[in-house]
Each structure stands twice: as structure tokens, then as C-alpha cells.
Length: 142
Image (cartoon, rainbow, N blue to C red; front, side, top):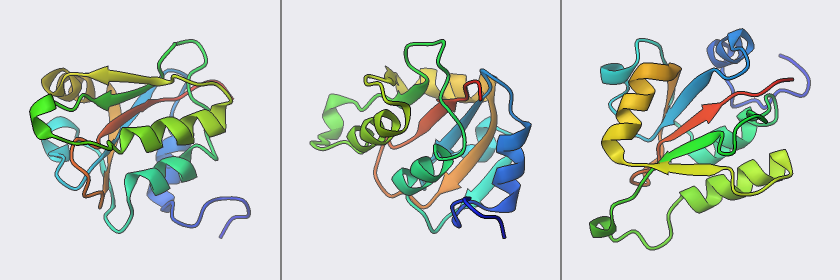
């Protein structure tokens, strides 16, 4: 047990976060995200929603200060009819931790998948039930 580390973060995730360098990326996938199709390393956190996981992680690492949008989310198609997207919660959480606003970049679904496949070091599989809730985080300098 460590002091100051959110209890929901498993040791495997703490190790992965510690091994990351500036500009490295990871993904937090919702419960429907096909993680193994896009990344070899998957860390399971099935009992937790993405906002809870994101808040815990951002207590330990900064977002990339050298890019305008260090948080990338999957764009929600209009036909999905989602009125209150979970990404609003991501924006609030990121802004609270970073002290700056407008940190999110929205990417089309298949471009998002390509981004994960090409850049994410690992995927955290959450139990998040919200649709189009996937998010890529780019680590900053500590």
C-alpha cells in the first residue's frame, strides 16, 4: 500500500504509468472497446467507470503541456442521439487537474481506432457503459 495513490489503481497500471515518457499515449476504453484488436497490452479495470479512472490517473501524471489537446475522444455521430455525452465529464476532470480548459480533441471513430493501434502503449479496459466513451491520454512532463 502506498500513501497518496488512489486505491482503485492496480499495481500493473501504476507500473505502466511509471514507465511512460513525455508524449507517450494510452487509451481508456469503455466496456465495448475491442482492446485486444488494437493493442497488445491490456489492463483490466472492469468495476470502474472512465471518469473515476481518469480522475485517479490525473492525480499522478500531468497531461502534455506542449500540445493544445492532450485528451482525444471518439467523436459521437449525430445519429447516435446522445444528448449528454460523457466527454463533458472528461473535459471537466482534465481542466480541474490541469488548470486550463479546452483540452479535448474529437476524432472520427475509425481514425480513433487507428490512433490507438499506432500510438497507445496500453489500453485500460473499464466497465464504462456509456457509448462512444473511449479516450486517449497523452502524458506530459513531470
